[in-house]
Image (tube, rainbow over all chains, first blue to last red; front, top):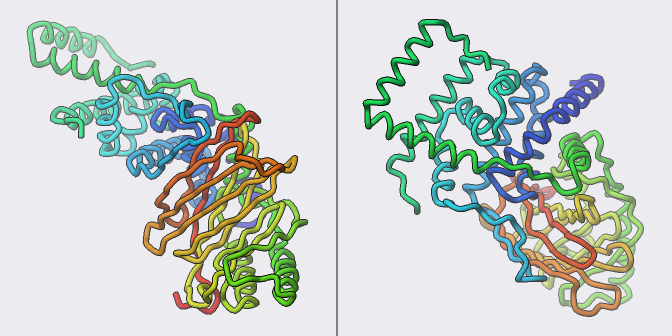
Length: 169
Length: 275
């Protein structure tokens, strides 16, 4: 891709990211509960989008592609649990937001989410986890309302099945 | 949302509701789905990133787009290190123990979250040249917008190494970048380095590495005042990272504000080393 193509892509990426940056960050933050890691997940999505600019030519699908990468990346980051932090300057200070009650079930839900097909996972994350309206999800993903409903139902049923015998580790 | 239901759809829905009224297993399933929805809904957040939305978008777009990065004059930095380091060496200032030399005056380095291949190539070449001057004893090389350091070992560690680890150490305060340094270190070696900050403050890093995969990193960071008294703040963390990964290593709370350390990680072959 030449300089002109790159310039167009930069403009497109900036525009599309500007339209969905809040949603992307909140998707990541909802899963990770840590500002820096949430930002890292968004950064990862943008970096991948840039690296794959030759393949991702349909502007209508860029936002949904970014959202899909953010959700997948956030779930993987959480599972890896690679970050160990200790703030030594003020041990009394809580550096991160405390997890809400029913943490065990939340952990189970996040693990089960990883097993969902990509489209169902994204729609569950958008519709139920972040409360995005069905119309907005439909527009974001470029699919029909019926498809959103179908995938949402499929995702929730799969989650229910996966969690039926789930016990906290 | 327009569901597109017609009269027959609505009739089926009414029939389903009547069924549920008389079916315990269906009611249980609905209760489970309700609980699942509630749990999923608890992930909802109105959180904002550090520095607000505009700063967040600027940071991420800059990091995602390699064309906005400005490549630092790596060879100029390397030459400075060579000149000052070589001079110090010939004046007998280098001892046998690991040590460092500080070279001020490098040009500002624009920040990116990833290592661009061309930049990696320049930095690795700089490391190889520095290593050659010091008979393969260079165990690490740090380059930032404020200084460059090189650490020497008693043995020819870099002469035996096939590759080098690259760490980008980025410290932000309220979302704004206050320090950005690239560290190249021989796997298994440790780096003890200082990066100047504004107003005479400085960052002191102690970073240990491993030779295994994923690479284990132990990171110790202190923020110090010009007077050199007790550190304003410090953090310690242990990470396991693979090339291409980046992570938030931790936060520091000081009277001057909230700092956050991010680390991007990569690995590159040294010139002349086998694949």
